[in-house]
Amino acid sequence: MSLESVPPKYAQLVQTLQRRIESGDYPPGTLLPSENQLIQEFSVSRPTVVAALRVLREQGWIESQQGKGRFVRGRPAMASIEQKRPGQAYLTKPEAATAGEMVGVGAVAAPNRIAVLLNVQPQSKVFVRRRLIVREGEPTELVALWLPLELSEGTDLTSGEPLRQGFREHLHARKGVRFDHIVEQITARMPTAAEAEQLAMPKNTPLLAVFGAVREASGRPLAVVEVLLPADRHELEDAYPVA
Image (tube, rainbow, N blue to C red):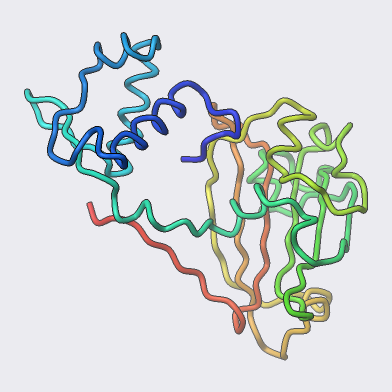
């Protein structure tokens, strides 16, 4: 679950309780304060406390025991893994922090997959900002940010200059939108001739295409981050707890 740079109250409570668990204020095996105690201490509503406890439980910091309460498990092993997924990384990291060149900015007809992810009509006009990433002097990936046209208006995304903020921070500041979660899809395909040339790909080498559909809390699509990775230079690793 992504937390905004200015977190909502439940996210602030999650962070506070995590810090207390890590510092030993709430040792593993001890009973967590009750909902009523947390409401009184932090002066927040019951839904805020319930939401924070749900996040902590889902992430493995605490566990619930029927009729007894919520017990501290400690910092989950998975919490030490800080690697961001490709879509998330490009939403938060400023373009100016990564070497590359702009290869396309403007309104284009939405490809079918992008249209579905943005919930717009196929071939309707959408905004795309596409950049070729270069590492150690070699092109390594193509990154595109797709937006409904109205979300691109009045932003610096229409400029050809590298953005000095992450996409999430910039769109929140300019358009007031809040990214809540990302639904990620990964597919494999052969590159187009233009993609193969831009990425200096050997013949008959496939692409890994990562699509991160960014949504607000209601589920409404806000943007799509598309990352194209030559399959001979990248591997995608994920880690998750066994339920």
